[in-house]
Image (cartoon, rainbow, N blue to C red):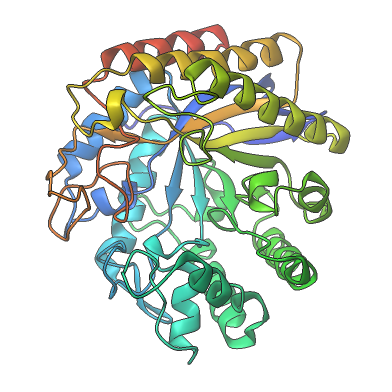
Length: 417
């Protein structure tokens, strides 16, 4: 790419819509959580990264949701290596990997949604801060001796753990205060940043948890606003699914005026809406109906608050839950197309539904195909995090039908130059 390409225009919110410069901005983007790892010299592959960014851009995909970095890096089923390998200590090669990714995206006028933390153990996240601060070992729910309820009970302690919260705030200050070592541009002055996102799927985990969670969320959002009032701020929330399936709780926790737009996530297979075998009540058509209902109800909440909303995570397995890139994506393509059609209507009507980030883009990565499907250190990075079967929700570079369909939708909303 030529360095003469003009810098990205600032993404803003006005009258309940996203704007890129002075034009409305609607998009179909992707999750690319491992992008900074791919950009590092230590464990990455910069040639692959550049090829993937070019492929994404050629299909109108200019919006990437990216994990700033993992925490800890000492547990099985978690991202390794970790950016923050000890509390307050950082792997410089991975920081430079983030810089390289951002510099290459800037050349291509692409946008990053950078999330700072994770509710889940697969990147360390809030549970790692608890372990660092004396709360005992993280009960990794994929290990046979632990359960998901145990993990949830453990994780819920984060928001009232003062040293944990302080350490995370220091992390936020450190990342947002960074100057890119590749191009010398401060992150807070780089319009490649569309949004700073508090975390991946921050959740209210019980009714009694709501007040302390809301206090923490507001304080984190306000901190981000104080550090960068130019770029947008979002929470990374899943919608009602992450708030005890209560739209009212989701609304209450998102009142802060410094939250510039809302987010929602959707997982039809995980939530029991869809089965590749088409069991009764779990067919593709059933899943599409439920998906549209879920989206539309959250769009109504966004309209009520006069803010746009993004479906920033969703996915669907390949045919027969296959992990092979050679397997059919027919049902996935139909599901994607059905929900993307809502974006066309929103674009035409200047609506609140502003975009999608599908989960996720695996590009030219190849899964190692271990018998259990999991990721092991040394394997290539793909879209599926290390605790999930590699290739399960991945869109590979070879998924031509999917990418062509996405390109078509980006053309329809004017997001392809």
